[in-house]
Image 1 (tube, rainbow, N blue to C red):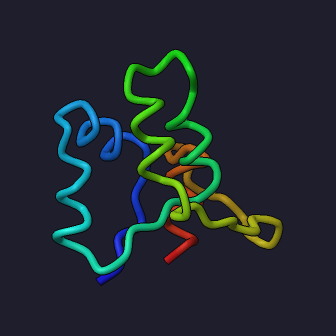
Image 2: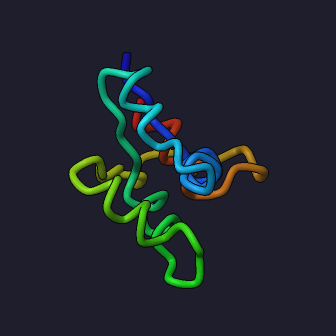
Image 3: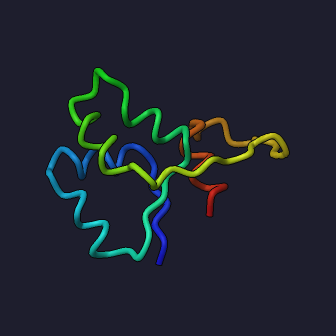
Length: 84
């Protein structure tokens, strides 16, 4: 099973030093570029750990051909949904 993660879950697991759980539960972990950029913002306490963990797990999402009707999802959440 593949996990496509958004930033909140990654930050929470990183704060608990439990990112390794993802490798045990899922055959593959991927994140969209926007989620990656959100996760590694230098003022976040977990940024360094997330940058290291997410290396080789980042995927680009072409959002040009989509119409967005949900005003409640941010760019990272939207890309994560489209990456599936």
